[in-house]
Amino acid sequence: EGGGAGVKKGFLHEAKVEAPKDADRFVLEEAQGLLDKVDELHAEDCEETNPFRAKYQARELLQKMMKQLAACEWRGTTSSFEEVRVATSLRAEYMLGVNFYDCEETSSGEKTLVGAVERMRASPTFSRVALMDALNHLGMIWCGRSEYSRAREYLEQSLSLHGTGEERLAGAVDSPEGRQLTTTLFLMAQVHQHSGEAA
Image (cartoon, rainbow, N blue to C red; front, side, top):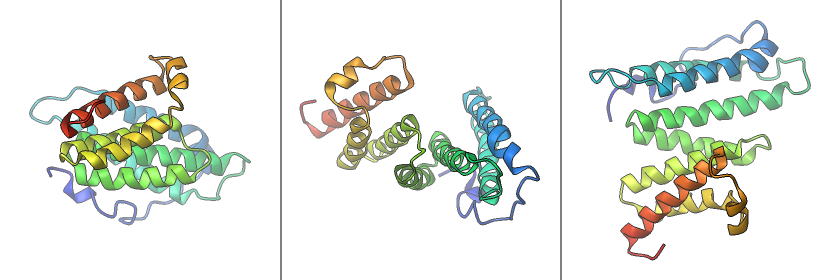
């Protein structure tokens, strides 16, 4: 796998990052702005000679932010502080996994996404859409390795989050969950095709 090798391992255990002076402001206000900036960088078109330039910038933001959020643990003064801090950290971890995948660093993407999925499932504040997207990306990773049974395991987990067939039909197609369902069903069809099964 290509560039960015120096930031793949131990990114939470490199240089220590001090907690922001105002933990409440960072967690409850500034962190969301950083995630929005990451979204903008992920959507940015880069020159062909350096196609992942913006995504590498996004990665640096995410990695620093995750360290800052970890350093803020129990430093807030509001009742919602820890809940928001954990939820924001989970979103950043999931976005980092997608970032690795988008930069064609699939092993790092898989490892980060698996960790994010485990922590999202264990958290009462996880985002269902983020969990669906993380599972879909893990399905894509295993499809890319022609390991279709492994891919199907993740896709079925994603599909189960959409509820029953009637509930899926009732959902808006252009909603975030609806778009994830469309992705899940598309990938599942690919898995069935390569497995020689009926969809």
